[in-house]
Image 1: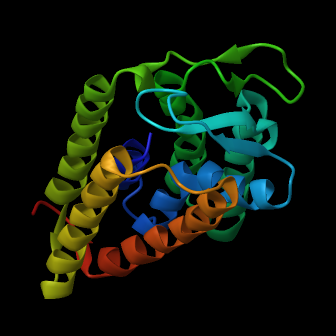
Image 2: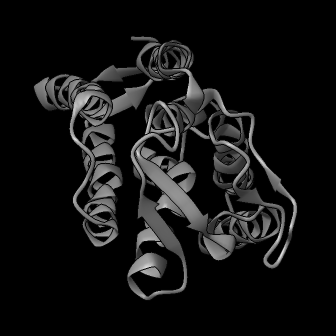
Length: 218
């Protein structure tokens, strides 16, 4: 999943309107923001293996800290607890925690069986939609469209920034998604990890245009 995780952030604004879209985006992306750090530290492994699946050349060899079901639940509870402590906004705390956990279940649909249930687990899960490029793109595209619809129809732009920055964000995500499909494999796992770190910019961008939008029917 890529744009599907962003869809969760967009849709979550309806359930927690007082929470910044930046945090709502960071929550479903959290595992993929932690993962590059762990790869660079040598604690998790990814390899470049063209043909590993039809959709991506990445082989996720080991990522029990960032992506096992047990630790994902822990990351979700931690995010929820930190937000609740800081804001006392119950809806936001619940939604953020669930958004973090949603990442594993969305990955479950597309990954081949490489998602561990807990660190050290011999059992791995994955339904393997990434073996079907068209199916992956249609499924994820529909999820993304639904998420964007929830956000766009539930908020309205206060000014030009609130409109232009939002649609520029959406267009860029779609361009990156297509480029990831048709582009060449990355040169190394370290390059993948360093590029992954840039994902932290997306929640910042989302927080920016969200400040220029207000809750209410567009």
